[in-house]
Amino acid sequence: MTPVECEFEPEVLSATLQGRWPERVDAHLREHVAGCTICADVAAIAGVIDAAREVMSARVVLPDSGRVWWLAQLRARREAAEAANRPLTVAQAIAFVCAVGLLGACLRAASTWFHSAAGRVASGVAGFDIGAWLASATRLLAEHGALALAMAAVLFLVPAAAYLAMGRD
Ligand SMILES: [Zn+2]
Image (cartoon, rainbow, N blue to C red; front, side, top):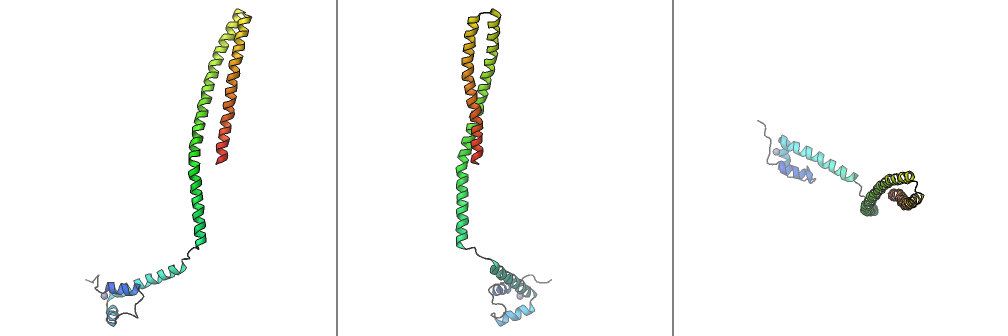
């Protein structure tokens, strides 16, 4: 059975990684590695790894401090902008929900008004009571005017809110 471990293995490894192999090690260690396959493998592999590490560290170019600072500034500014946008988005969502709710209420009111108006006009025509018909028509016009004003306000506010919300992004 071939041995898988050798007591000199750590010594050879550290000598290789510290750049002492093979010139600056004890003669008896060199002699041992010459006759030991495990230590010869360790020396060869560690030597290759060490050489690769040196090549890689030579290729690594440290970025200059100005660029690092600039990137940090850029990142900080972007994070600040994101943090500032978050509550604005929540406020926009609340405003939109309110506007939609108001629009729904207006539509419901308009539908109720239409039904009652149709009923009142029909009864006015049926009775030929011109005074009552005028009174109800005037009342309807007043109600209608207020309702139309509210509808126009909502119809103007919703696109305006949407436009502002999109314009900010
Ligand atoms: Zn050995």
